[in-house]
Structure formats: structure tokens, C-alpha cells
Image (cartoon, rainbow, N blue to C red; front, side, top):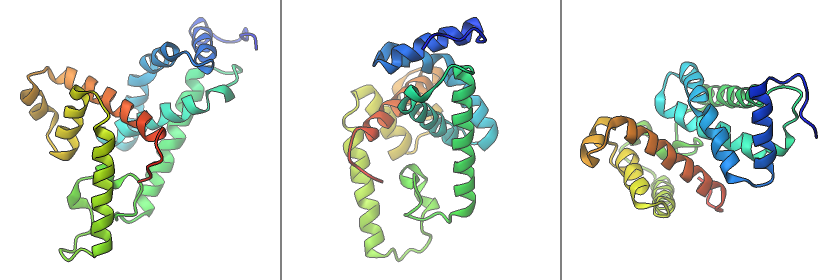
Length: 199
């Protein structure tokens, strides 16, 4: 399909990247991610007012967009299409979060603060087993990451370190910690998609 004339130069360049990505060019995917990651993240942050949720939703938005990239048609800008996917996904997330009581069955709760889970000290044996299995699967997948990314995920989610604490522990600037953690979460997302694990 030829590039339509109603697109701006920026949108036409995006479309060229989309065509390359649709053919399996990983560098094109990476460039599209780099061009819009921050903008998507800050838009979602305004919607959910939670940095961790905004990071998760950003990765989900790109994951959904890249999975459906061959369905994109250039009658409007790629950025418009991407922002629409991110917005709709975020609205679905907020609707589910509002209507679903937090429990072990809540999708995505494997990274939540354990204190948000069932309040009773007498945990049902089946619930305890489910929680243990989730943690084991999570650790198994994290183990596939490169050492520097694995360490970041372990500190952030298993030991619940703050960004400042991670920066001190690894002797890195906090900006580097955030950037590498985002990349680590991106890699995790891809691994999740390529395994048969279900959480």
C-alpha cells in the first residue's frame, strides 16, 4: 500500500517504519517504541496517577499495537492509532480495577504489594498454593533475563526496593535505573507472550 498524501512527514516516516516492522524488522519496532514510549507513558500516568501502573499499561499498549501492526492502515497517523489503543486499554484497566475486588484471581496481581492481597491471616491452602505457583513462575521467567535486568526486577518487585534504593544498591543514576527497569519490563512482557505460562 502506498503512503497516503494526507499524512505529515513525521507520520509518513512512521508508516515506513510500520511497513518494516510488519516484515519483521526488529530495529523498526525499537525505533517506534523509542519515538512514542515517553509520550504514551506520560499520557497514561495522567490517567491512572500511578507510575507503576502507567509503566505496565505502556508496555501493554505497545504489545497490543505491535501484535496487530499489520492491521494498521495509513488513513490516519500511526501515533493516532497507537494513542487510541493505549487509551482504550487504560480505560478497560480502570474499569476492571474499579469493579473487581482485589484477590488472587485479579489479573495482573502477581506484581502487586502482598499486603493488597487477601487480608485474612488464615490463608486457604489452595490460595497459598496458587500464590506460590505464581511467584515460582515469575522467578522462572525473570531468570531468563540478562543479569543486569534480572537484578533490577528482583530488587524492584521481589524485595520491593524504591528507585532511590535501587540506585544506591547498584551505584547507578536514578534515571539509568528507571530506563533499564523499563527495558527489563519490556523484555519480560515479550517473554510472557512467548511462553505458555498463564498468571
